[in-house]
Each structure stands twice: as C-alpha cells, then as structure tokens.
Image (cartoon, rainbow, N blue to C red; front, side, top):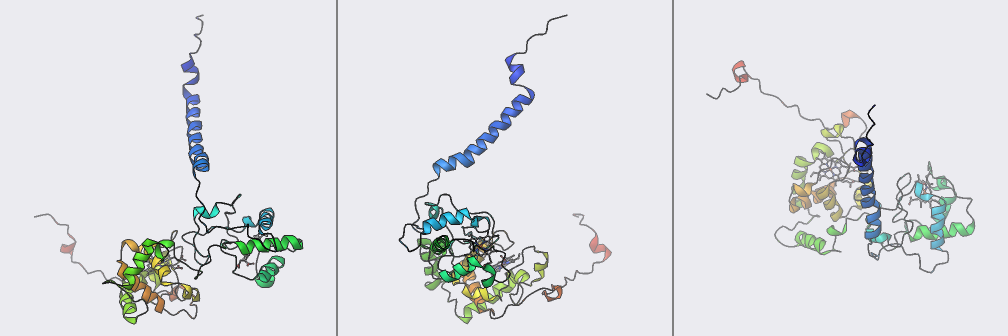
Length: 329
Ligand code: HEC
Ligand code: HEC
C-alpha cells in the first residue's frame, strides 16, 4: 500500500472550513475593533458646559443621589437623552454633555418619561411624594414605590433629579435645535431673513396665515386633514398617524420649532422633510397658518367616517379605438 503523503501546511490550515472560520472571526474582530474599541479611545468630546454638574454644594448630595439612581435601576425605565424626534422633553443633548457621566445613564427603554431635563420641572416636595407613592400624583402610574429608601437616600436622590439638565434651562420647554435659534450664526441668519429683507414673513399676521393656508391645503391636508385634526384621507394608511394640531400641547410651540419640524420632518414617521421641497418663505407662511388652528379643545379622531373623504377620481370613458396602443404611424 502506498504510504499517504503527510498533509502540507497549506492543505491542513488554509483550506475549507478553517479558512472560512478565520475569515469570519477576523471580520468579527475588525467590526468590534472599529465600533467599540476605536470610539472608546478616540471619541473624547470636550465638555459642552451644559452637562450636569454634581460638584455644586447643596444640603443633599446629588452625587450620592446619582449612585442611588444607579443602584435602584431607575435607568431600566428612564432614559437620559433627548433625540431629534422627541417633543416636550426639552433641549436636545450633545455628546459633550456626558463628559462627566460615568457610567452614563442613557438607558434604553422609555417605560417612564425621559429625565434629561427633569430638574426644576416639579418641586422637590412633588418629587419626594412621587417617589414614595407614584400613583398618589399620577393615577395609574406603573412606576414602583421607593418608599423603602432612607431619608438620606431619598433627599440625595431628589437632589440628583433636580440637578438633571441644570445647565440647559431654557425659555421654552419645547425648543428647536441650535441651528434654528439665535444661539448660532446659522440660526441668526435664518431669523434675520425672516424678520428683515425681501423674504420677510410676519408669522403673526393674518396675511401670512392666509398665504400659508393655500400651501397647507396643497401639501399637508392629505395627511393632516383640512382642519388639521390629523384626519386627512391618507391618515388611514399610515401606521404612525399624522399630528393632530388641535392638541392644546401645540400652544407651547415657538415659531422656530414649527419651522424646524416642517423643514426636517419627524424621523421614524412619514412626515416629509419639506426643507427640500418648499422655500423658506413658504415654510414661514405655513408656520403662521398652523398657529391659527384652534388648540383649545382636543379633537379625537377614532372613527373612520371622521376622516376627510378623498374625492373619487373619475376616469374618462374611452371608446374601443382609444384603448388601442399607438402604432407609431
Ligand atoms: C418600572 C419602571 C420604572 C422604574 C423602575 C422607575 N420609574 Fe420613574 N416613572 C415610570 C413611569 C411609567 C412614569 C410615568 C408616570 C408617573 O409619572 O408616575 C415615571 C415617572 C417618573 C418621574 C416623573 C417625571 C415627570 O416629570 O412627570 C420621575 C422624576 C421619575 N419617574 C423618577 C424615577 C426614579 C428616580 C426612579 C428610580 C428610583 C424611577 N423613576 C424608577 C416608570 C419607572
Ligand atoms: C405623508 C403624510 C404627511 C404629509 C403630506 C405631511 N405630514 Fe406632517 N406629519 C405626518 C406624520 C405621520 C407626522 C408625525 C406625527 C407624530 O410624530 O406623532 C407629522 C408631523 C408633523 C409635525 C410635527 C408635529 C409635532 O408633534 O411636533 C408638523 C409641524 C407637521 N407634521 C406639519 C406638516 C406640514 C406643514 C405639512 C405640509 C407642508 C405636512 N406636515 C405634511 C404626516 C404628514
């Protein structure tokens, strides 16, 4: 019997499954390296000056309160980041806000509301009573009671809650990103064009609202409805329903925020980015119109016959000859 030739290095290691396994493993390592290790080493945002600061002297110790927040697992239900698509959670966060946050309390699930800017929203008494018995203040709340915390823990935790977002105090709780406000050059230029010059629009004038009405009917009514109740004929086919502008909540919206929403749409929904479709002036006209919509009483759309009806399209009746395709003669 001929003696078998011993396998060569190449046959043994660089063929078939082994080679595949090495390939997969190294791809995996490259991905981990570039998405986990490289950012860990290279991503060093400088402090934004607006992040939470636990060094301020207080009666209670917010820094200790933070440890209690971590210990009690508040982050399982509460996030601490405001995203582009958020409304009513206050100003958006920047990377530098988290400079001193180790471990950061971003969280993943919003079983409860986002707490990024919770500080100062409620009195400390309210916060304490809420932690002891959430349902006493928010009927039907599913937040557990933390009445078992010692007095010291409770005070420190409340101090921590009150420190959240302490550098981001803003005039309006609903605030457009910096590029749309006079806090940046870009925003200043935008607002300048709105108030002075040829394209200026007075968003409080009825002339502007009237101009906006036409643009609204053409571009928005199909989803948001003629009255702005979110009941346009298209609404039925959208999973995330168009906004209902009768909600009293919208009274809080400053002009820039309306403008920002119209320009950039709402991520994760079918709301288009009209910044790419309508001119700046047209968008300000829309803002003027949206502000005039009634917001004193919330209209609830729950039945299909409340939707604006789409007009039936009447197709022309064609004769046999007209159906014939062109012959090109
Ligand atoms: C099981 C999930 C859950 C956990 C854990 C939890 N919460 Fe909540 N939390 C909620 C829900 C739901 C709400 C909204 C209803 C309400 O206000 O009670 C809420 C509301 C709040 C609010 C009120 C926000 C506002 O302005 O209306 C604060 C503050 C708060 N939680 C802080 C905490 C703190 C601090 C902890 C940890 C000690 C904690 N939560 C743990 C679910 C949770
Ligand atoms: C294809 C359907 C569609 C069209 C067309 C449309 N929208 Fe929307 N719009 C939506 C949806 C869906 C949302 C998201 C609602 C939400 O987030 O709950 C939305 C949200 C908005 C918001 C944000 C509301 C908020 O809660 O912050 C504004 C403002 C808005 N639309 C204005 C307009 C204007 C003005 C037009 C016309 C120029 C328009 N939309 C056209 C579907 C549409």
